[in-house]
Length: 333
Ligand code: ADP
Image 1 (cartoon, rainbow, N blue to C red):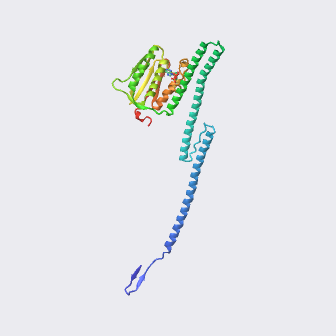
Image 2: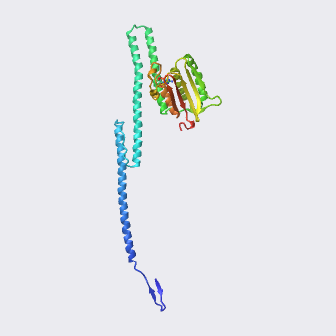
Image 3: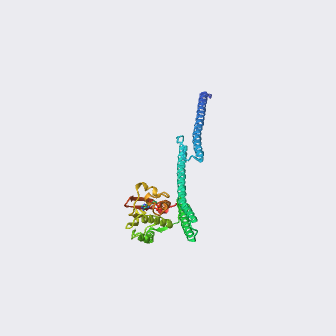
């Protein structure tokens, strides 16, 4: 600072910058030390996180290799190393669980198919042996050919049904959805099955709201198949003099198709199993069938996001209800 005096001279005052310089140097040193600390800590933390992530990923890839070698039951242990690794482990374990279930199911189905094909093949072999050992007359050969053709037809039907169930389940056959009048479908099914019901001396009733039509967006052929399989079973497992009712109604905005019968009923321990391929309750093994009808019903219901409810009392009868979702336009979206 400069200040002129009375006599013309100037007085100049100032202060030394040495203190500020020293403080600046001290701050710079502290800042550099802090920076070095942050860098050190950051590197260590980064290394730790990377190590945790890679060790988690290594565990998953090691498990994947061992599963590929055949150990399908192997799962990765959750070690809570990092959220991302935990998510990966959970997703991997869920996928392994599904794969194991699918492979087990595939093995069971293959065994069942082998069993179901072995029986008619053995019958055909027996027929051929008996015919060959018997008198060489044309009539017995004709009979054998007829029986063999019948066995072949039923084997082809079984294979076709299996393929159709698998395709419906895996949505290879995309649904041919159209606006479908369930009222009309139920009416037609009642007419179609009336003759069979009459032959078996069973009363077949159909019930649907008379004042309005119930429509959904669905695959007509598949829904016809679903209703036919349920009606076929109801008529098969109901003795003469009984009643089968096919009804259509609405429940909380959902369309419900129900097939009720006064037949033999289903034991509680069989209720879950009957929807599996080839499962037949002991009491029905003497009746015609291959145990695929309800597996098909389940596959069609699943493809339409419909739910199946079963109420049954052994000796009194059963009721299978198929509940279609209230917003059918969402199907396959
Ligand atoms: P299938 O009728 O060819 O035996 P399904 O898959 O249609 O095969 O049915 C599986 C089994 O479930 C039947 O064998 C029978 O034991 C039982 N079942 C199905 N529907 C009924 C019913 N309405 N009443 C009693 N039992 C039934």
